[in-house]
Amino acid sequence: MTDLAPAPARTRPSRRPSALLRGGRPGVVLAAGVLAVAVVACLLAPLLWPLDQSAVDLVRTRLAPSPEHLAGTDDLGRDVALRSLYGLRVSLLVGAVAALVATVIGGLVGAVAGTVGGRVDRALMRVVDTIAALPHLLLGIFIVAMLRPSLGAVIASIALTHWLSTARIVRSELLSLRSRPFIDAAISGGASRARVLTRHLLPHVLPRLALATTLMVPHAVWHETALSFLGLGLPPHLASIGNMINDGQRSLLTGAWWASIVPGLALVTVTLALAALTGRWRDRLDPRVRAELQL
Amino acid sequence: MTTKAPTPVRRRRLAGAGVVIRRRLLVAVPVLAATSMGMFALGAASPIDPAQQYAGAAAFTTTEENLAQLRANWGVDDPLPVQYARWVGNLLRGDLGWSTSRHEPVTSVLAARAGWTLLLVGAALALVLVASVLLGTLAAYRRGGWFDRALRATAYAVQSMPVFWIGLAAIALFALTLGWLPAGGLTDLTATGTAPADVARHLVLPVTVLAISQAPWFVLFVRDAVAESLRDDHVLAARARGLPGRTVLFGHALRTALLPFLTLVGTHLPELVGGAVLVETVFSLPGLGAVTVQAALGADFPLLAATTLATTVVVLTANLATDLGYAAADPRVRLDD
Image 1 (tube, helix red, strand yellow):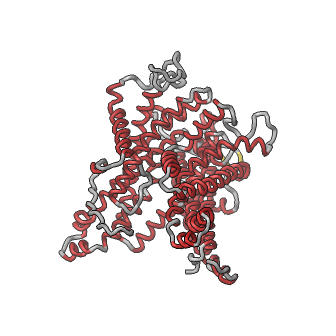
Image 2 (cartoon, rainbow over the protein chains, first blue to last red):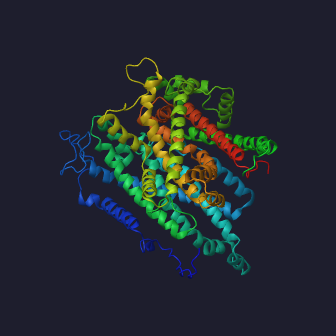
Image 3 (cartoon, rainbow over the protein chains, first blue to last red):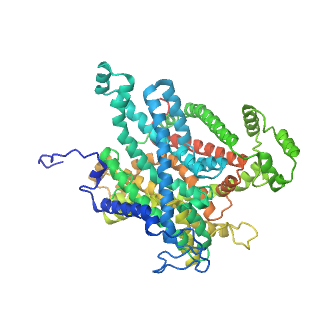
């Protein structure tokens, strides 16, 4: 505060996701690299290693990690590294779809609350506060238990417990936009309600919505993993990381720790990279809010 | 700051408590009603036929007449509002229903198991609070130093680790490889009762794992809050008066930073409960969380609804308690406005 040198002119940070890497610290580049490798490996896995990942080999069960099986084999003789890759595919896909569904629910509720206002707004926000006060894992377990474990039930369980933050973000964004002069200008210029919504409000809300969705993906993945671990998640033929950790418990107790620990490690690495990148994206979009993750 | 607050002022701090409690109850009742209604609607939408569930394997040989008689006895074909009113009426009279997965009344399941869950959550919370205050303050004191950076990196990494995965890793390392601690259960298999020493030894791993999984939020919060308050005027003033570093850090900076901490504890309670469910499952502890999972696997509506509603009541009460505690601790917060 004491030096009298003029503050360096600060350029406005770009809002495009591609600008994240420019001038980034090494941690960010590392996170992007990890994520890129993981996504490419997941996408190409069926082409590169077209081995039937559910193939059972009862002769080679619980083999320790070796050059042939990088992460060993599980109690049914399946390669843990390859299954982790396939499990990651399922986990990330389910997490992304569930985050999208949650964003749609939250976006609609937030849009109604933010544009209609008044009593409707208060009632909707009271509902949001109510659900936010509940332990969301218990609520998720309850939803899956009643709908019976299946792909649809897991997505419903994630979406119904994770839409709250999106609704709050969209509502508060709309409320602050409504009082801005350019909206008044548009209305006094004769713009219809629909035109104000689609041409003036939506372009401002969309980047936030995209960010909220991406930020939600790791949380959705963790929720799915917890449900699958408890045996309340995806059916066995859709083996996700959670199912693998659950299956691996049997091997773990006989000393073959890799069957549970390796799939979890894969998940932790990818979600950590994802959370770090989205955190940086949020820093760019809204420098006032500090990221959950800083690298 | 230097003069002692006279007693009347202190008393006025909680003057609005009654009003706040009454206002919170006015909110809590609709919240619980809405929650129970939502849960009941989900239960009704469930594809499970309670009569067949009750009969179990015998359902294959039971005649349709007998099943119909069961349904008529329970009134499960009555209109939903009637069923809901009956269920809530029973709940209010203290009859929580019959657990179909445990084959005993829900109240006796809760009575036998709630204590272990409270012990697990309470011990983990105590450990988290002590550890995060110590580690967070140390990190803030040497902001940007190697300890600060290492602690923050660890905290961010732990945030993305599922608690049950940490639990399994701990079992593999400390129970199976090193053999220091038991891998699960509440007592040794040969034990006839619950001797405190035996239970304590079995709870070391679960409590530590639950505490570690929740610690990042608390550690980072304390670190940021103390770092912030180290720049406050009153801390500068304390330094300028030449007070020793430790006094300034713990007596001045930490004290002001700790107030918002109460709110964090309140908002993080649901997370802690969710973590307890998973930890109890990993370590085969006979708590409410493990029984909730079994109930969910068996679609046991009465037990699931009871545990979910009971947890909601506990969380709402704890939130009220933290708000009152905040008002009691911070003279700037007034309850009566």
